Length: 229
Image (cartoon, rainbow, N blue to C red; front, side, top):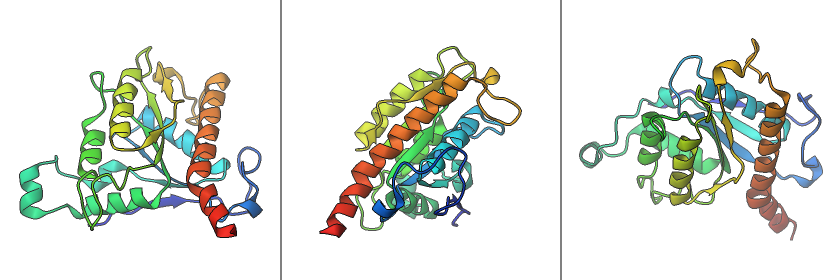
């Protein structure tokens, strides 16, 4: 069963929260396409709040962003026997197609016992299984990735990000050097779910800008240049 996907776009010429696009529209055949998701399944998740802000910044930078909630896919725990008997679940196919259709991923990951959540790891594992004539790494290979985490701890979930960075690199993705570990997240957001600290907000803005520029340079600009030949 396919789940409902929420796609949020900024149309050419539409007002954005900050400034203009990073890229002149007459030089863009298309916008960088980003898939945004969180490893948290908790209502009121700080990681989801952080991801929402990063999504807004990505839209303001000129990207096309598709936001998904991993809970909606209801994937079973990965089991090789289950795969052999029943095949790849339909929602894994949906997720793989979404991943392959996008240029990069925005991932907000909570830290669970020094690593990542079971929800996120299970999703990554299922989506690394071959399906539809594509190998297991097809959804990940060459994708740009920006990582972030929000945590109640003073370390901001950085240990989980280290773990996730290694996983994404092993899957063949290109992980941005800059990530964001938001410490004491319970005190970080105002009543509008925006960051209290302007330096923190600026750090996130700068990281997202680098991420979108890098994604554009790696995935969009080469296509544009080839089309112009």
